[in-house]
Length: 266
Image 1: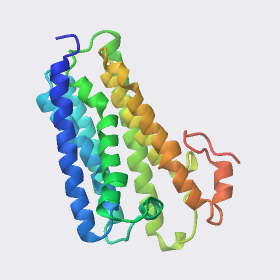
Image 2 (image 1 turned 90 degrees about the horizontal axis):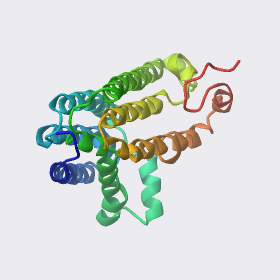
Image 3 (image 1 turned 90 degrees about the vertical axis):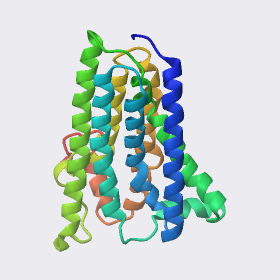
């Protein structure tokens, strides 16, 4: 099979929507029970792992690429899930969600489901379209095979930036002598958001793998949207808004690149 199997894609995307709906419903119930909805951040990465698994099992495209994509997504997603779980365990609600619900008029179930869980579930489905389409495409060859290799390399860069950046920040915060200081060493000296940069690289790498066979390239809006949210919508921009009030952060902003890793300015 070399072309696009529309019926196969229909089965994959329908199953993906179903597992994401179940996941978000379960996450909402857990959030309602414990009294905080930032638990949705824990299941963000997990949702992509489930979609990648569904695509690998139900897709009838190239088996090697299907399971390669699943392994890559599983490594990235399960690490992120554990990181977000340990980061939020024992803490209160994320101020982002408190502000969002206040603007929406309260935390009634309907508002919470619409503003947080439906939005998150749809975002997971849309961003994961490269995984779904890739699962029903034939094997890559020639330039397409090169795209797969480049995609894996970009994924590796992304995972390294994301995991190393998270580890460096966690280690920095765990040292009592750093209380009140701004993290500006390691990867954080080259970019103010190495974890978000890494996340973006992961999804551009996965898109390259999908783009190795036509029409996988048409899913380019998925990594574009992901990068937009990481940089401008809910990721780096909101964090910068709160961090800019801390002593020393404006100076850190002047000498350190916002997103793309660049040598620090003197």
